[in-house]
Image (cartoon, rainbow, N blue to C red; front, side):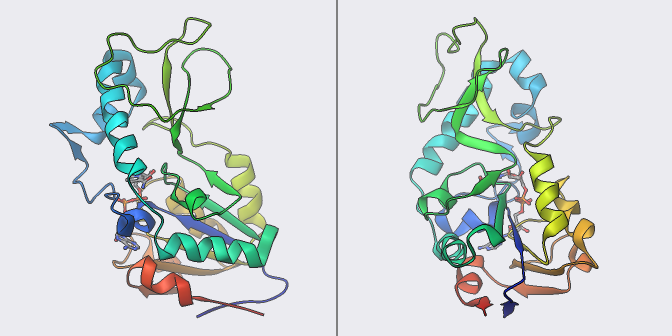
Length: 234
Ligand code: NAD
């Protein structure tokens, strides 16, 4: 059990494992492949420049999988934790689905973007909600400025969003818990090393992550089984 005292500030990092029990495959769960493409080949600025229809096909498929998913007990437990800790909890997810929000988490930082948002690839128009699929569209949707509308996703080779806010929260946390993330995708994989020594560090998931040695304690098992009983709040 993780004890949270009155002075504690908690940073939670979730990865695709937290949504696995909701039926959304993890990156490694699908073998990192889609059709005959490696995910890196359809989730990159290079892929967008070369074949935007293929990229939209991929994200349209991911939107339809995510649209059918419902939050599981792990998402619900984190929303409950926020209801008790309020701004002493910082929830940072690598996930692009909206299951934390569906579980009624309020403040969720999506460092890798959001599946149900799109943005212009050219102008500074902010990302906007977008639930449509664009399978094999005759034309890639266009912005008023003439640019092409792309998924609001941090692709391979791009910089994750809101890193300033993330590091401010990491610098203040006293408890750090990573859930369902393999510890190989940077920069998230290095967050635990950044806080180690200052904060208590925990991992939750069925397998040891690649960065297991950085954690004080690993709780081995499915997030939906472990998280609902994990936190004891003073
Ligand atoms: P990963 O696929 O590399 O690792 C998933 C981890 O989840 C593994 O360590 C696995 O042991 C663990 N896991 C599997 N089932 C679990 C469960 N029931 N409870 C807890 N843990 C479980 O995923 P990653 O580290 O998040 O990095 C992959 C990248 O892929 C991320 O950048 C993420 O944005 C992206 N991605 C997101 C989604 C999503 O939004 N749901 C889905 C697939 C991939």
